[in-house]
Length: 200
Image 1 (cartoon, rainbow, N blue to C red):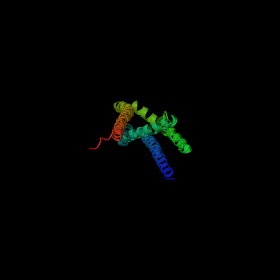
Image 2: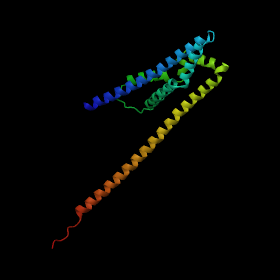
Image 3: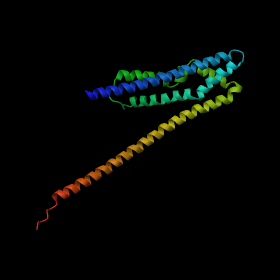
Image 4: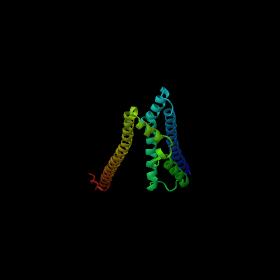
């Protein structure tokens, strides 16, 4: 009974964590789209400091923490999705809840989600790229996105290597422990079956 309660609690905690990441990723897209629309609206008006402020905020979000957080959440969510699809999950888990999570992940982080789930981001970004005063900044932003994606992939690969090394070390330690136990058992058996010396 206790095991079932613990399993249910753990499963619920995982679902809650994944759901919160889906919500966070979706919120990031919404915020980015709102900033893009604000910038686009200002670009349609006579140039002003407000235009620069709005568009800089949008570009900084792409180049900064907002997009980085989005990519980080999606990396973890996609990793869970890949494990689920490959069958690396407990068959007793709530399949309906998992399917709901899968739909949420596809919506927030699926292929082309940044363009599909936003209305103004792509058009505003492309418009700013075509503006000479913004060319250098947007080129930097594009590089930053590529760097973030590369960094995420590199971190994932490093974790895989570290996990393999840890597993190998654990196997080695287990083999050493078993060998030591066998030696100790053999010494004990020898001690037990050693002929007693005749008493004087």
